Amino acid sequence: MATTRTALILGATGGIGGAMRQRLLAGGWQVKALTRRPSPLLEGCEQILGDALDPVAVLAAAQGVSVIVHAVNPPGYRNWATQVLPMIDNSIAAAQAVGARIVLPGTVYNYGPDAFPVIDEAAPQRPRTRKGAIRVALEQRLTRAAEEGPARVLIVRAGDYFGADAANNWFSQALVTAGARPKVIRVPGRRGVGHQWAYLPDVAETMARLLDHPALPDVASYHMAGHWDADGRQMAETIARVLGDPAVPIHPLPWWQLRLAALFLTTPRELMEMRYLWQLPLRMTNQRLVEMLGAEPHTPLDEAVATTLSGLGCR
Image 1 (cartoon, rainbow, N blue to C red):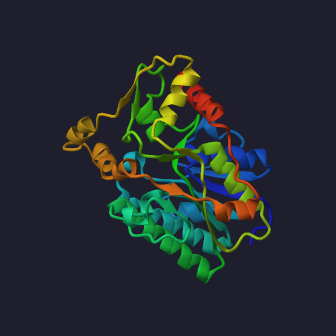
Image 2 (cartoon, rainbow, N blue to C red):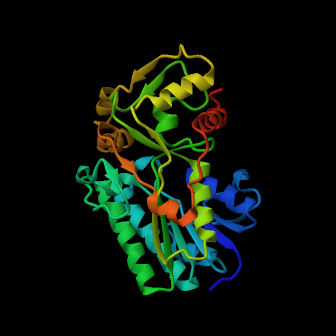
């Protein structure tokens, strides 16, 4: 088993992968990044060319690491059925070979409405969507691998991500559009329906602190509280306030356009499948996390939104 603080990140140029890359480097870790092509974003990392779908490449990249951050997903919600489980199998095989801990950013897709509205780590996972079923199967494979050893697992589940370096999420693809000052702010949910958000640097900080904790179990799962938007309007109103122009109109997301596009395009069709997460309130509780760390890392909402908008080129 590796004794140095060396991590391999799959998906190091993405949202949570990028946030973990920055946090681990700042914390003195050595970081390897498995990437299909060289990237200037990976300065400070050991860049290893390869694909997360290639078991030989993942195993070679994992040599000498104690942590594998599995932050890779098929782009645009496409090809989940054929790629998600093979990629986690490759990470599991590598972790078992070198005795590493796999760190997984969890999703709320695992839960169906029967678990709503308040969810802790013991809530039943009975998803009603294809992506949810795949995520449940993924986590089941991780748990079995950790029970067999010597691989270990850390799952940190949070709400919808937002952050300066994350362009593939609801914040940057629905509420605003990256690269331009918003002329309108779109809200996917109904008024009065609460929604949970997670600022990427807070998620990365949480993961890093857990990795440093001497009492972290071999199979560990924690929920983050993040930022709770109680009425479904707080995030949009914060965006308007941070922009310094409260007159920016806030309108409902035109779901009918997505529904029409879903007849012909894969990504809108996959997004429509997850609409239920905007129609019902879902709030994860962080009691277990607070008991472990003492407090959850939490950036004030105005600061987090301001940094996100600047990073997205919206200010």
